[in-house]
Image (cartoon, rainbow, N blue to C red; front, top):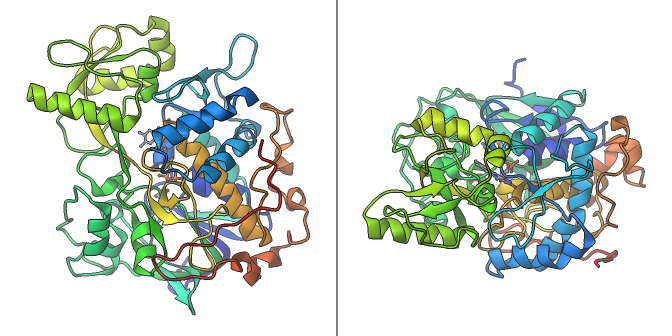
Length: 500
Ligand SMILES: Cc1cc2nc3c(=O)[nH]c(=O)nc-3n(C[C@H](O)[C@H](O)[C@H](O)COP(=O)(O)OP(=O)(O)OC[C@H]3O[C@@H](n4cnc5c(N)ncnc54)[C@H](O)[C@@H]3O)c2cc1C
């Protein structure tokens, strides 16, 4: 198709990770949706998630789940956002199981839960050590079965379309594999100021300027939409060592910031304590925190333990860096000796295989070298409980957005959940112009299998505003009053606050 004239749709979604895909599935089936992926659809961090996804396993865990999240986040979290996430967690898990996501179960056929650092009890649903791939692949299949959703792969958003202070879509262009690794601003400029200095400073990046500006023969085309959802993931591509895909260069934050959209907590960057250390360039393979949850221990060069492996990520990362300085090395060791052999074989098969492939080390017999590596971005585009940004018509969800759930440090396995809870809330607001209740009634985990067709049909959203024209209604952003950087979106207070 010739894109020079541009395209029109009801909703454009930038990003095909769990946030973008789940949002698309939660919009009415009559909504014309266009989704963009900077690389192939497989190249998103959602595919990489190993550990699992948190869920409120039983009501008795509510307070502990909340407390663990707040403690990990150094109490800088927005407690309301955390409660919203926990309350909606079973709904998300049930939706995933309805579309065929297979989580591990125990002998009684109930969901099995694992535990990671800073969790006071097991509450993480998982699929071996490839939970993200299992979830994202199934979401992708469901999206592909939808005639109303079109995905444009290898297509990057390079700017927002803004008219009279309202977002009216995005500017996009097709990109090859090399260009996909460049920040968006590099794709639309021929100069070398690739990332605006003030944003670079705000990110506090160990930033290596990209010196090879592409010959910009990329021809941008407009995608006009009634609502735009930014679900463009994190910022790891801007770091020399990261677990993230290199395509994830913080584009949505950079572009939104350039338009004066409110951003938040840009210095809150999480380093994962245990990236597999190989000394080679390229994406760092992650040794999941659940390995330590199942008993793996950290050792210094003398083979001695030096820290509590289950402390929050930032604490463990700091302890490892200190130990590396003391030992004069660039890594420490992770030993699986205390971990049950069957757990290694059944739960950590991919990790074992990767260590064998990259270093020839079998974790059944030997420790592996690990070092902290950039992993997750807690900050981002500031959003309210509906994923609405400070710019009318513009929404954000997933790692790109900052809704306050994670505070200064994310609790392990909260991000897939948080991304999907806000994706659903944003989709609802876009479709209906009104908000989901902040605290929906909790449903039992593993509800009877609902026919898939009922999901996301217009009927499931049978409310006064559920017709497609709701997408055109200015009401979709009527609560937003500020469009300038630094002004907060107004917090939504739900009429239904049945929080327990
Ligand atoms: C190795 C690893 C393990 C992890 N393990 C876990 C875990 O066990 N549990 C957990 O909860 N979380 C985990 N996380 C974090 C979690 O996977 C991510 O935070 C989450 O998947 C982010 O989802 P997302 O939809 O926001 O972004 P992503 O899944 O990263 O998707 C981003 C999308 O945006 C697209 N995009 C980016 N820029 C542009 C642009 N300019 N134009 C067009 N498209 C663009 C990309 O192509 C991609 O499709 C892990 C992360 C990593 C890296």
